[in-house]
Length: 105
Image 1: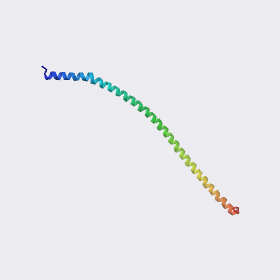
Image 2: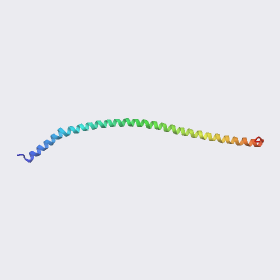
Image 3: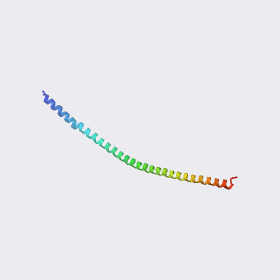
Image 4: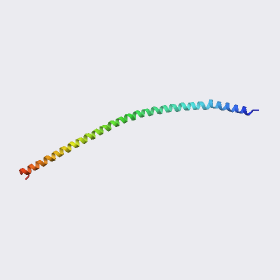
């Protein structure tokens, strides 16, 4: 007849064999597959990071160009305003000269 110790030893050995022959190989295989997937995902993320970095640089360059264009346009509008004021001043003087010389008839 089997004693409690014999049953315990049989169960422990059976569980040990089950773990070594079934669970451990399964877990190793799953772990290797997960590692491979993680490496692939890391590679994809790195390529995306590089692409995003390039896009960020491009966007920064575009933003700087837009800001420069805005500054240039502001400068042009300021110069146009100065020119407009000078033209208005000349028109006023011409009208004064016309009035004073009697040419506005």
